[in-house]
Image (cartoon, rainbow, N blue to C red; front, side, top):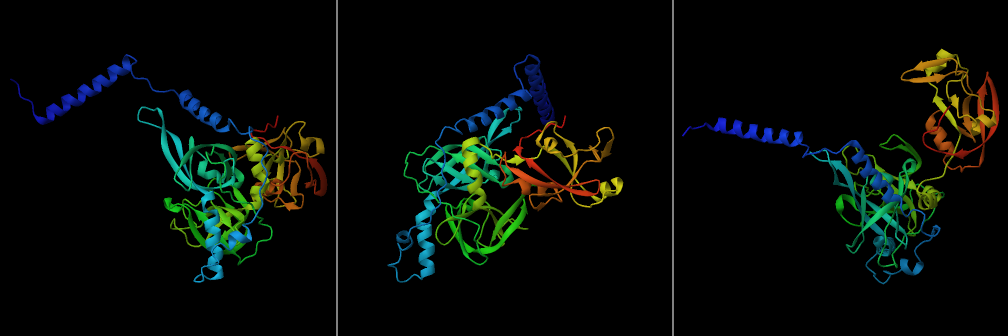
Length: 417
């Protein structure tokens, strides 16, 4: 009998496995999914997510504080200070309205097959007893499935019925068995003062319904998100916010939601006392649209704006250094009808990877907002609805002109033909 060394045995075994693998491929027994399969799964997920977006009755904003009776629930405990009683009563009244959100995403396995994978986690606030939950867009951004875990440990599968990436907000809907859900009412963020007390409830690092207390540290902060978008008017707080708090409520001393906890500034990844919340007035404005349409209806000016920089200013010998050059117009769009002028399309100019057209109007102001950057244009139109009229100030041939433009509905993939 012929003997084989250990190395020879290993080589023979590996060769046999490889031979079998290629034979299977050759006979078509092993098939790799095509790109269309992955797209199909993703499309099914998107379709499922939006199925019931408009089936519910019209959502009504609930703006309410905790009643005086609720705030005094622990008044008989003489060992607590008034401040402690206020904090305890708010938490005991509202913590059951804060949910844990977990997600599944779609990944690709060794055989290039789409498979579910564990996603991220976050927090959310129940804002309606029909099961509507307000959270952050980034919590559910890549979600294939979404799960809502209530205070009692019961988990429901939910659907993302609305997304607003620009304000980092989203709405999830689940079907509760108990229709008597604890909900959080909206307050207002217009009259906040630096130094006032705030409370945050969330699920940092998986610790359910954790309460932290702090103050409003700053107001009106413009903060850039991980996707590069700038959210205006953010509330800065020193209440401890950590990973897992995203989407949870920021409350005032009356138990009203004044913000949605969104992000932290942290070189180390943990809380350093600088957290940011989306102001609740933004949520009040966009939530009805998210529930009804699945997106926010925003007004827009149908142009292709180019943000000026010193190279463009120098090359084109422009009279201003800041503004938005109108390179192209949407044909028969609202800007075209209002008299806005685009660039000379017969003289294209290569700028980096883009082709731009010089000679068009330069927009320097929209409804009183200076437009030095494209982000400024988004900010200027954030609160405007389709059909509203805005004043647009332009520079044309070194002269300032003001034009009125009726806003159209903003859409992806605008054409400049």
